[in-house]
Image 1 (cartoon, rainbow, N blue to C red):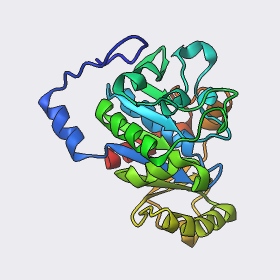
Image 2 (image 1 turned 45 degrees about the horizontal axis):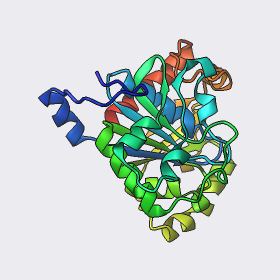
Image 3 (image 1 turned 90 degrees about the horizontal axis):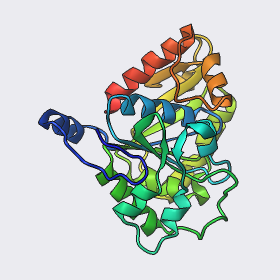
Length: 264
């Protein structure tokens, strides 16, 4: 077991079968999509699933406008909290610096979180360069079994998202079944081209669908996540790392399992 709690160092003691499994599958995953499509929800549920299998997972929250970290869990559920800004503002990004500035939960020592803390924003720290973020992501890939990057919808001024999308082994594209999502992807195509982000074969997810009538534009979605009131309640209650038990929740969880098998 690898203990992520403050003051501890990582010890890798993998069986040979586990090493072979990791080397064949996704190492770094970037998740992006239209506003309010459920990017963070899918990212957290994937991270929960992988870390429950005793895999070391780092979940990176890129949003600098509305930091996601305060929404993950209640205050008393954190073992230790630190900001990604403390890493990116350092003169030299090292493995030890990253380990000492991970946000850790009391009940899940396999999951490390990186993002801005409550009351922080994009102006709380010096602006990060592309090179700094590339170094961070490369080191995360060496430290963790899996790195999941929760990208912001507005990537034009978010270097964490841009570099994450460039460096990711696989990209998930999430959309809601509405006209706004269609408009978003049409408008963002030029930004992706200008940023030299290759998005020719993303894994397409249709989220929050409520009936079996799917518009033609979403017909080629690889995965379809049903709208689930229980998960919406978990989001509002800062409880997305908890299990789900409702009928639609179990259908949602089954799709998460399928997505995990596809990716990892």
